[in-house]
Amino acid sequence: MQPTTILATMLSVLTLSPAARLQSAEPLVLQLRYQQPTTVGATRFHQLTRDEKWDPQSTAVIICDMWDSHHCVNAVRRVAELAPRMNRFLKELRNSGVTVIHAPSGCVDAYKDHPSRLRVLKVPQSKSFPTEIANWCDRIPSEEAAAYPVDQAAGGEDDDPEDHRLWAERLTAMGRNPNAPWLKQCDMIEISPNSDYISDSGQEVWRILEHSKISNVILVGVHTNMCVLGRPFGLRRLAANGKNVVLARDMTDTMYDPNAWPYVSHFSGTDFIINHIERYICPTISSEQVHGESHRENHAFRFANDHRIRLGMLIAEDEYQTEESLPKFAAEQLGSHFSVTTIFGSETDRTNVPGIAAISDSDALLVSVRRRPLQESHLRIIRDFVSKGKPVIGIRTASHAFSLRNAAPPEGLAAWPEFDAEVFGGNYTNHYGNELKSTISIASGAATHPILRGLSFDAFSAGGSLYKTAPLAPGTHSLMFGKVPDEPDQPLAWTFIRGDGGRSFYTSLGHRDDFAQPQFVSLLSSGIHWACNKPIPTLEEVTSQAARYSSGSGKQRK
Image (cartoon, rainbow, N blue to C red; front, side, top):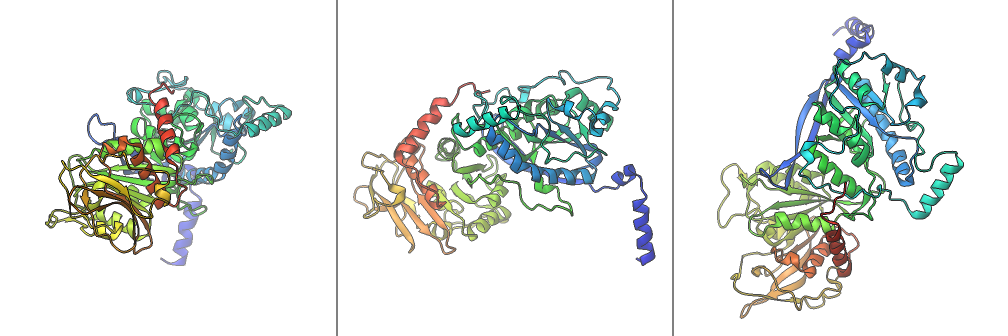
């Protein structure tokens, strides 16, 4: 193209009207994450994604309750940390032609003369509104059968008591109500007087959406389990009334106190709410999907105090019911130090693992798979993960996870018969008869190993048959042995430093009956923590956590 032609093209673009420029805008290319039952009526879910292209002109983003203050000082701190990244996200959306609606509930009077507030008042009245669009929404029909994942009955404040007292004193000295100190939206969130809207009214927001022919809506802001879900302009109302609504899952925060059920970290509480949303209300996206030349982000936002290990649990075996025992174990034991994603094999196609891509985003991997050759692309994800030297934990059938008995995989599928030797340093060849009960002993010199601290297996009865695992590879450290009458001892649990330097922990225990015994629960928890180089909980802490979780489970928590 000649220079004069380029200049003419640039001038023609610059002289377009704003509406014409928006019509030429590139579509938003988004990956929507959602969850669906592994089979009809199941309580287990596949975490899946789908790609969509959204027309910016048909899209709005609503900023929910990013207030300038709050009665919970930790909530204030997290808003201050989140706001700059959110503001960049909003800029990219605004520049692409997306309508931006600021919704600081109860604070609209602070903007009565602002052009973005006056713009709302000029929007034509709608001829009709959805039922109850002006009201708070506690649930929609799709949630009716679901157990709410956190107890927020006490309000969700997670402040240190002394911090909270000092914060309330400061708010009072500033002339603010310490129970409801918000006066406007956080100043770090910019409001464009030329294009944005300000409203906290469900009817007004609906008018804006209908007048601008907006069918797609992104929700950001706080707090996910309360306002973002329940406001008249929140996820529930919009989803129930036919809008293609998504939550930006890293542009939000919850009101959740780790001292309330299910007794997990604040950030795990947020994860649990996001899971609930993806299963029963709407999909989610992540902010780094919205790229622009001015502010490129190549990763999702994560709070600085969120130090959890992202643990993927790959579960695909049909003999020991780990699809039930492992999620329960994770819920009871791992919520403080881990962000757990369960990845289940397909119940109709043994070669398929829906959602296996989540392994690529994990920091550690737990494997409970039995004799499943996989689609080549799926097995490559696992191989790539291991090659990076990341922690791997295996239980029971993980020793023969991706191999067949003396057979090659069918065409188009891939096996990994060396997985046991290469990843765990094991040597599984078979198992002794199910009728043979094994006795368990701690390996010589291993009683002081951090994984076995305070554990005794004298009265432990293994639920399943004893695996033949000897001899182990160099680089392994045997922790426990099993023995059946008239046969040699077999390694039952061990650690391994792989050739890539990664830590592995494996135990051939993992029968459903093993999970009923505190010693095994503690062993598995300790093995996971060791592999991930996290402080190892004691048996007393593991037992106490299980009891505390059970005491709060099943109560009404909304």
